[in-house]
Image 1 (cartoon, rainbow, N blue to C red):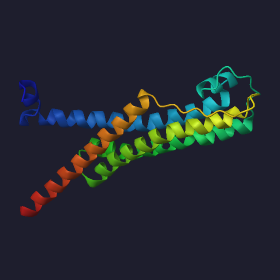
Image 2: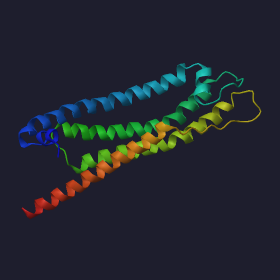
Image 3: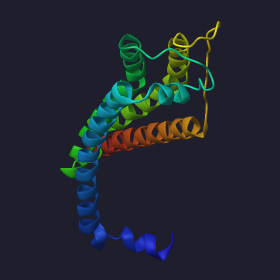
Image 4: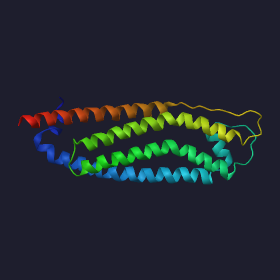
Length: 191
């Protein structure tokens, strides 16, 4: 173990370490709420205020003559694209509870493990839904074009892979915390 890590984990450093965990957890709990709000408002603003050209470009439908995107299509686009966002907001609300618990000094509880696990599930669902929703949006929006056929656009990028990796990282962390909780319960039974 390196000298800096061993001094960080020393018993004398524990009060400062716990206070840092509590302070950062409070900030992250507020951040989960704020990010959820900003993402929801941003999605609504995107579908209500974005120019037609920007929406079609984002859907991968460039270079095609199109009809103006009507309000019904915008509303359907909002509803469809809200599905992965709803998963993500649910996960953020669940992990916010875990951060609130961390801020209160409760670390290895079943509820915290569940919050982290639920964030991992939400990230996984949101990430897996993203290409499907993108394809549905491209079909929906291609109805607004003068082209004879309809277009299906599927996008898989590095952001998708990184989000899947992050979901896996959070899931494994939750499993490790659950295992630590089980070991602590076993040790408490011997005392």
